[in-house]
Amino acid sequence: MQLLNYIAGQWVPSRSGRTFRNLNPADTRDCVGEFPLSSAEDVALAVEAAAEAYRSWRLVPAPQRGEIVRRAGQLLRERKEELARAMVREMGKPLVEARGDVQEAIDTADYAASEGRRLFGYTTPSELPNKVNLSFRMPVGVCGIITAWNFPIAVPSWKIFPALVAGNTIVWKPSEDAPLCANLLAEILQEAGLPPGVFNVVHGDAEAGEALVRHPGVRLIAFTGSTAVGRRIATLCGELNKKCSLEMGGKNPLIVLPDADLDLALQGVLWGAFGTSGQRCTATSRLLLHRDIAEHFLERLCAATQQLRVGNGLDEGVNVGPIINARQLERIEHYVELGRRQGARLLVGGHRLTEGEYVHGYFFAPTIFADVTPEMTIFREEIFGPVLSVTLVDSLEHAIALANDSDYGLSSSIYTRDIVAAFRAIRDLEAGITYVNAPTIGAEAHMPFGGVKATGNGHREGGWTVFDIFTEWKTVYIDYSGRLQRAQIDIEQ
Image 1 (cartoon, rainbow, N blue to C red):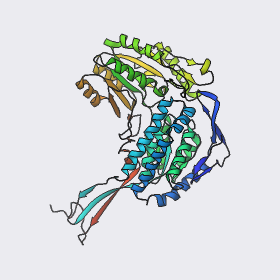
Image 2: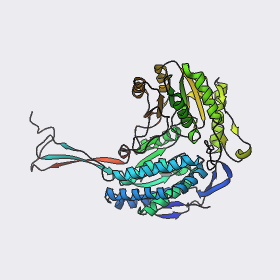
Image 3: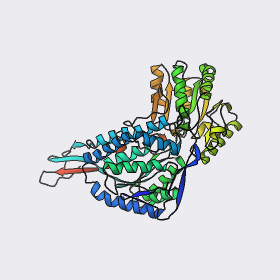
Image 4: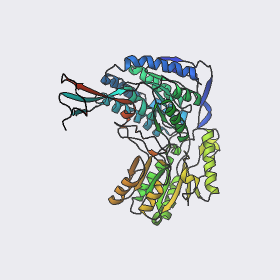
């Protein structure tokens, strides 16, 4: 199946004529489609279309822009199963998770649409008589959106829907590992009534991504992906004086204290570590387990992990899908080998699955390492796969110290019945998100999402805070005194 870019309301091939194939990671004999391998020329055409559309789109009242996004949410509801199945085919997560991915975009559409009637500014007193001080949110302009493959509908919606409601226009470069969902979302926005040029999709690899970042007509870059790529984008945006929002990696800790509901904690660790095959920036990759319960808990955790069914996400009863591609599979193998060599004790998994139903896909057995110390690579670096590192702790203080011993600070979790311990963890964990008696995954669309340290650059997607990314503040002073008044000077001392 030959698929195209979406520019100025039209489906068009790349000017380069080059293409790339997107393969089903559960069965590489299945080619999902052939997509344009776009160049800087294609990006320029999309930016030109977005810049032209911005002239009129920014003048559409925000509630009307929100109404179009609301209709897109309704179309997502109507096509939820179709989108979920397409998602499983191109990136592999189990169908129940894919449905949740689409549902998150539906929730985001509903929330962002409602903000079209808010977008509050501030009115403050003036220090001078007969003068009014106001402030308004204004759109930024053409926004470049670059997203990863693991949430190919949900994460783009976090950026695209608020950006549209705020009055911006968009050029989106989706991941080459999940391009089909981008085209389906473009169809939905077109059907919802978005004017041509307001939303554009340009497929491609790093060449297209860098062209988008560098284009002088793009005023803002919103990125989700690896820390290495995010740092490159930050450097370029700094040189070009562009606004940028970065959502990058995580090495998320989950603490289990002796007083916890261990049945609940067990479920949370399994879901947090192995949901989406561990291919989430919020995945539970470090289990900080109190020594007093370690032997019993690990025995149960290993038994439950071995019961997880790995396979094609479209098959009934599958808990863990494939790894996204061969390169990532090799990366996971590399980290597992490092764990062995550096002295971690392999309890479960640690190998590719290659026989029977797995022969044509990229599958890795859910893996647990014990005796992991902070000096080990698997404690410190993001693996982005179904690999859980277990470190024993002696106290809450010890657990928090180890949790914070990381370059990252996205998500965190603690299981305890002690309200004092819970609130101390909330206060002291260095992370943008903390869960109490829930795993490190499970963000909701109406709340801020993002992290600290190497996880991001201070912005928060989701909820009301996302509009701080996609708007600029304009301050207005209205003086009706009929005479020159000089701020700071004409104030009576």
